[in-house]
Image (cartoon, rainbow, N blue to C red):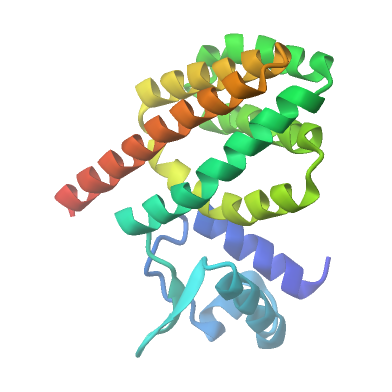
Length: 213
């Protein structure tokens, strides 16, 4: 892997996991030393992250990790909702039932994963990948994949809320059920409900974080 790719992956993962929280200054000398790369590949990595909106310039501070605000979350969900609803509907029309039947069984047992956020979100990632493959719509999926780093970052806010994770697992199960049944309208509707509840939860979490700051 090229040095710029290593730096990009490490910084991106750190931003998504909130190891580099919003507002963190990404000073070139410090990050070059921390990541063990020279400044040229680091600049390439930072340029990619800036283009993706995960990093932004801030007057007097150089490049910083982009903030997460209620307005940002709402904008992300405005873009996300039509894309994911359409992807779920297409998946219901074009799916391999066996793949989603396996996911169905996993989501039935998802409550056992709630204490292990990495395992739970691994299941969600497999669901996303299965929908991407089943939808057979490259441009649609490319648009969705551009949003997912941002969505993964704000999803981190829900990891300390077991009740929300249990509810989200049930919502995912309804989507999978609709895809297994080959019902595109129900798959889109179940996706709409899941995203609506996720948005409300994210906005509540943001409000609580502000109240604690």
